Length: 125
Length: 125
DNA sequence: GTCGTTGCAAAGCGTTTGCAGCCTA
DNA sequence: TAGGCTGCAAACGCTTTGCAACGAC
Image (tube, rainbow over all chains, first blue to last red; front, side, top):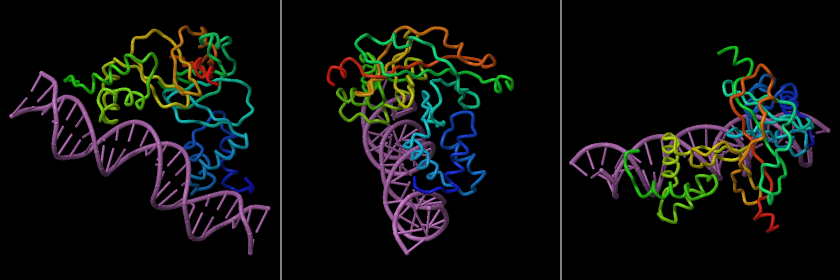
């Protein structure tokens, strides 16, 4: 990344102002409000550049395409609403999870996610 | 599913005898030992039929294509080896995980997975 | 013989890449 | 002006679907 462009500004702003991890499609939709004919390929390329620079973190949930949030957040997990498909941040972490693995396995990390209905979708149901 | 065929036998046996969840490709490779020119499309179609019949359960891990294991196993979680890419079953479950979600969210379930190196890959390293 | 099932090839779908033109520095 | 960046369209990898032939019952 050598140059500052309005496409990159729009993409970065979209991610920064969202309070939750966004999929490439979500980023594209939001950033398109600023730049009408923004190409989806540019979104993918720019996300990758941000990842390599360490500005973005990839959020993988089971059975879901990757989403992205700004990096540097402290250890946390996610809640996936099965109705609106949005992903929310959750603070905290259940401890002692590594103990579940066999003794001769090396545990490098863990992923935990909850799913169900978010407050908004619960009210709408 | 109305008829018994050697393709379905081979696919079911592959899954049954594996002690871990298998991807469609893994199923195809294993079952191909029985039936040389087994088509990958048949594997996908048959897996779907087994899913609909409830004989199979889908195992989704973050950032991974779906894998499949026979259904009816008691609540458990998985370990993903980043070296050999295999997925292993783990017994047990860290309790009280639902408490992480906001109070006004409805938690329907959780997914927990560990990643690192399995015993075999650790020895090889 | 019927019709559920199969293998092959084509179609889908989300993501990546090639390339000519654009635009930042 | 140079060359990084963009949009478009083609290419990709994995999964699904269409279709004619096969084979279980």
